[in-house]
Length: 163
Image (cartoon, rainbow, N blue to C red; front, top):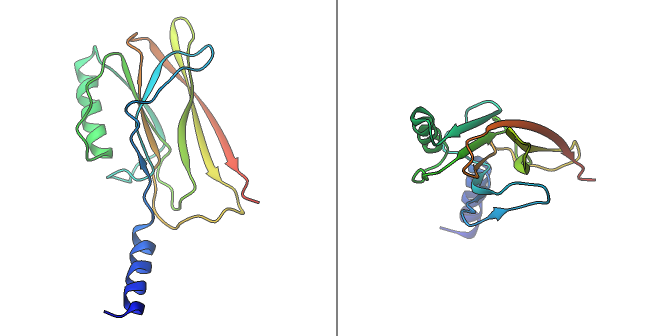
């Protein structure tokens, strides 16, 4: 195989498969000022199943149907073993996107008394941004502290300026 053939093959695979980005930070625990403890379990742009709409899902470890639903959804997104958890688990998904440049993250988790307030940050590329042409569906899986409180989501959308 000559150099041109190898280069063509690599470029073709990159074009069709896109670049992958996956982060598992199972040891990352964040505590911000006036915030409660939470742990990022998994974050990725490319789930196993890229279909889906934007949704923020909450699962309670003290409700067996929630534990089973979390197991099903986690396996649909990843090829990893489903983690066990105490408290609440969140899966936040930005929904299917036709190109790269989109991100989803947890900006803050606050104990607001009777409930836990989770701020989800959705980033999208600006008009001048150069992005990959690949289907993405950014998601983040987060474990909250063992309090079984009701969870309320706050959604913040930002557009990244690439000028």
